Image 1 (cartoon, rainbow, N blue to C red):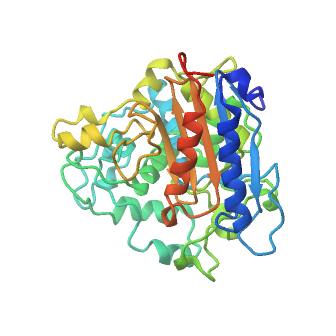
Image 2 (cartoon, rainbow, N blue to C red):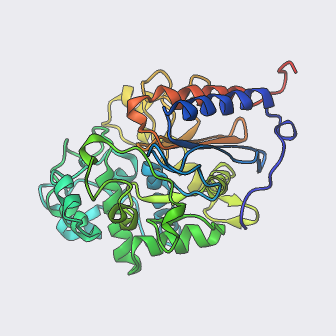
Length: 381
């Protein structure tokens, strides 16, 4: 398997004029320098419209045109893919989500983290911080991944207790899941993702970190101010090679389409059953209702699955005004967004290289246009 079949928009009941509006908008933004580079993929009914590329390979003024074999830094979209690889262990009976984390990492009890169960790490209800207090210092010293893991186990203090009573986004929770996986499998998390996701799906341009891919293929991104002039930023050799499980994966638009179709189709794509239907249903529906002590407004308005986030309509973090709470996906700080909608039987992949927090409305604007391109029964043609 290399990619989903390519079809014309009309063959997928997609409005070509609306898709062209999204393409034109990205052309305008990249021409103006608002976004250095980007790619769009839209899929439906098991096929995809050919990926479209825009802009340059990096944010530098004289950067080369974007490569059509470019691999984008997914940022936090890495997280659900790492969680998917862990769910494969759940199905084999090697990992139990309702076990305390200390069952797998006894020293995790430091700073009274005994109440955290494994599934709290999947739903961002663990109370763990997003980043370590010495995150920047570790990066400045080019620390290896095990130094971040050590900090997540021994140094983190819960933001709330007990687990399951609050919701706080936690990259370090993803890192702890990666360490559980490493201890269970005796593989690095990159090797595990390779064996459980990349190889079974036949992905040709995806890796946790750079792997052995030529560095020239990696699409460079805008970086935040604290990384300016450093040797540890998102475009540095150090960060590209580190492969952090909370945000270090590189992938191509076509490979991401395969992953989206797999999740959209309950774990199966082109004859490969990656996860069981029941596992994918659990991963892509609201798990916050399982926590009786979590405030009802949070459970209702900010739903999370297992690693995958559900859309938050009416919230600032909503992915679009045409997407309801059943739509699942993720976003990344480097300007990335993916969403999957079973009602439409389709998905959208928006990979840009402009820091999302500086203009989050851009991705939402594109998402609205793309969502409106899905022609539904009864729509006027």
